[in-house]
Amino acid sequence: MDFKRFLKDLQGIVGAENVVYHSDDLLVFEYDGSVDRGMPEAVVFPNSTQEVSRVIALSHKAGVPVVGRGTGTGLSGGAIAPPGGIQVAFPRMNHILEVDTENRLALVEPGVINLNLDTHVRKFGLRYAPDPSSQKACSLGGNIAENAGGPHCLAYGTTTNHVLGMEVVLEDGAVVNLGSLARETVGYDLRGVFTGSEGTFGIATKIAVRLLPVPEAVRTFLGIFPDVETACTAVSTVIEHGIVPAALEMIDALTIQAVQKVTDAGYPDDAGAVLLIELEGLQDEVDEIGDEVEAALWETGASQVRTAEAAAEREQLWVGRKGALGALGGIAPNYFLVDGVVPRTQLAPVLGRVADVSRKYNIPIANVFHAGDGNLHPCLLFDERQPGALDRIVEAGTEVLQICVDAGGTLTGEHGVGLEKKEQMPLVFSEDDMAAMVLVRDAFAPDNSMNPGKIFPDGKKHTPHAHPPAHGMPA
Image (cartoon, rainbow, N blue to C red; front, top):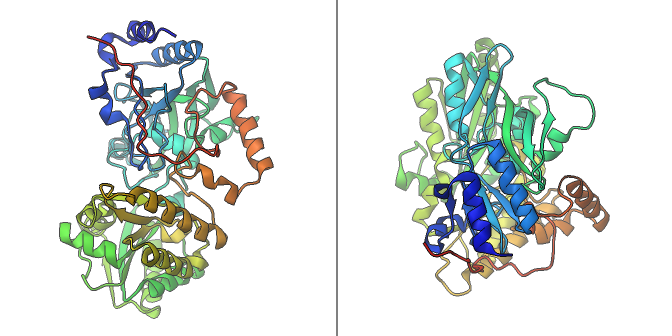
């Protein structure tokens, strides 16, 4: 393939200003929120579905792999380009195309930022429920690729529960529509199988999402506990009362200390753990259930219980949770965030074994996670400048995933498999299981040219710092 000719053809589709190919300009696109890296040969910024279709068709004909890229907040290497591949990124396609208040839905482009959509529709008394911790920066297209969750997925579900339909471009450039604007559609749920396919099926260019009414009342509780074990007991007790909060989050002592050094989130410096519990609904319902939640926190050993209903007060309680990962930068410059899921009843013993891993490898591990649905996020802190540090972190992370699987859990709740966990897929799936999944992928992308090398094990050594050479092109 004549790569210079290929670049010229890309420029002919989207304009010269919308193709980046010089190695210095590509540095920012070689990584996402994971530890993996891989420099693309070029990054293309389309403005329309037609341009996306033509770019992908051209790449398919030239044998060039394509990776869709949102804003690069993913945590499993999903947006990392394979050797010889290009990225298609969507900062130009960031428009909210329509808000249908009567039918409570919105039509958006993939580059729309999650929080921007939620903020926009709140003007109409509506909201977009999925709220990843990266909500201020992550895009809807990326959320679809990874089936992103967030603190409020306990009550409202992950992204897949809020996507009605989408327009997608397949690997040969064909444009197809999956799902519809209706709540239910006949035939196979291709919308559902596409959501969470990590960009291996194609790229969404328009997305129809359902919206929910803003609740009449919201109340947030902060339960302060002497240790993680007691806080875990409180989680089970709240759920055993038949209460499903909108959110139920836990933050451990190491994370609390990091957060309080950055901002005063109101967490006591000596707390062993805190729980954030949020209730939403009618005022009478929130009042009644709120009394039960507060009683459950006290009876399980909380040293303090605080409540907040005013928006500013609730936002202050959430500051620590939403900013936890950034605050951990005060402890170490790098982190490796594991995304295992375990049954709620196994939270305490699993966290105990995670602490054993911390001691074994002499690695600080901070825990801030969705306790209500058992979605753990052990955050392994390290300095990649130290020789061998990255290999040790990956090894420790693999042990943490094994612990989750041994406890009856699985590899990921919302971050995806990507590059990070693909070699661990045999821990939970048989060869036949994975062969069936490949058949589904091949129905969408038979040549495996969309985000290849992700999800399925291939025995290749995990080499996060491998930088494929970029072709570049003289100015």
